[in-house]
Amino acid sequence: MKKTVGTTDRIVRIVIAAAAIVLAFVVGASSAWGIILFIVAAVMVVTGSTSYCPLYSMAKISTRDDSKKHHIGR
Image (tube, rainbow, N blue to C red; front, side, top):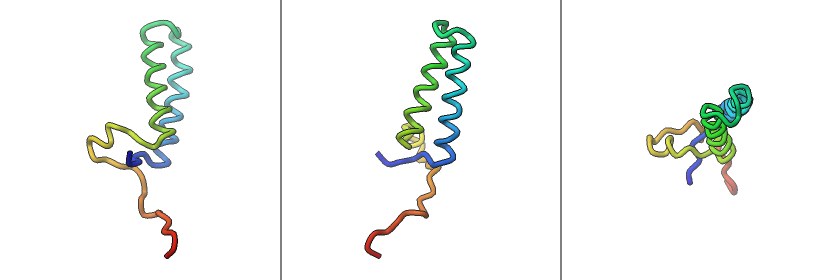
């Protein structure tokens, strides 16, 4: 898997996940909206922590700055 999620994007995803979890408890954790918000939070945490977004890959989008790659042995 090629990493497609940059640092700023990762931070935003984690913040959205935290907000979704809080909001899920506000609307009711076992309500339909609460469950949807938990799913959104889970997706945001997984894509943020792995730096890989399947939708970005399908659309050939990347928010990573690949110009900062370290070249070993050069």
